[in-house]
Length: 233
Image: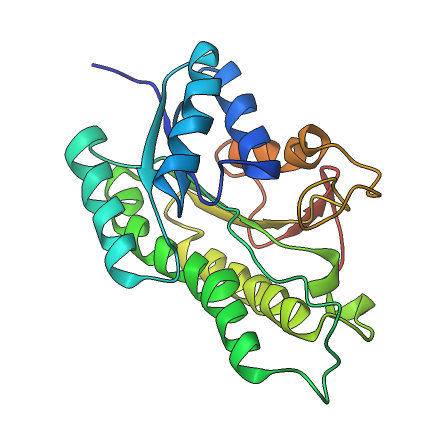
């Protein structure tokens, strides 16, 4: 019987997601890399093959049918999923303020950043409950913390604040099922979204995400972390 744990990272052909996959592979996990573009995803897999068992499947988290397809793929290929890292995120909307935001654009942000994570959680939680094990990590942001909320990036901030609420709700419902659900702020990271001036590397941004994915049974759940320390919502 193969006891290797299987992890899926959404939006993982580059940046923080890519760094998470590299770290998980080095730790001995089987990992499913996902991307909206099949070409980009397959290129990323080729670069990561030397680190361990990595698979690619196309995924658009804003598309219900795409989520259904990857859920069926995981069940038919691996039987279940142990770790879900909801990393896919878009639209750091610095050009918006709350009073002039393009609400259609905000809606698209919510479809990916909130509902995408929600769809994937709903797709994989039944299998996690059946095996009585699961770890869900929602990659959030300090900009979604109500205790620090200020002006700017309204669509992105609202989407991440809502993701944090989703974390709390799922964690409460699943805490007796050995399925731990936590939010992680990776910090300001040098990615396409974070920009070249950010102080953190993708590897540094991935550290706490992978740590939360590996929490022991009876570990913390329904919490918000940065640098492996709990922070305020």
